[in-house]
Image 1: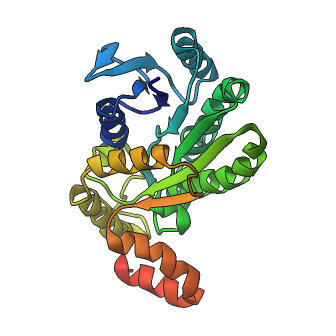
Image 2: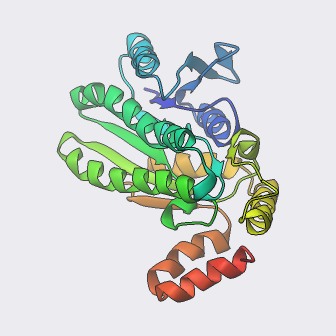
Length: 267
């Protein structure tokens, strides 16, 4: 029997690549977006879901269960980016990024857990970010949301072990997607004391995305996680230097690691 997968944020970028790759492997895939244009795209069944709106989350999960009677895999992929000097990011934007990147995935998890507990099985994959392992300049809020989701996954994984529900994080590095176009950018103000350094960092971030990895790599990585009998707590997918940066943070003195980041961002 084919496994049923629900993936949020599946209309573009990494989410689209994961969803379409899983279809080729025989999974029944339900993808979500806030305003889907078609009900079926490249084998992916689309549902309307906005992770910040609890009623749409409940309705989408109920629709999948009504048709398939189960959800075997949840992939929490929906999210957005945010950049800027923390001092200059409006408070409403800081709250918004947490609603989407942190509280949103938790809403979806809570919605699928009763069914997974009843079927005594399930896998939840939270798409975090390598940026969630470290505080990055001018990406403080983004790093914070992804770090929070990663730590929550570690805790929830232990809470759900008795129900045979498995959780894991998969942290991508930079991939060639349209994420930059959907980010909130604090305006680069001529009068800002951060103008020079923020401008340099912003250009570097966009360059990293433009020259990022093929998002199909994430599809293959997620498929490998699903087929593992006992998934690990954390996975990292991306360029070697991005993955090794997480390792270095764990072994280098904090000031030396900070100096590496400062040099990288030319600060």
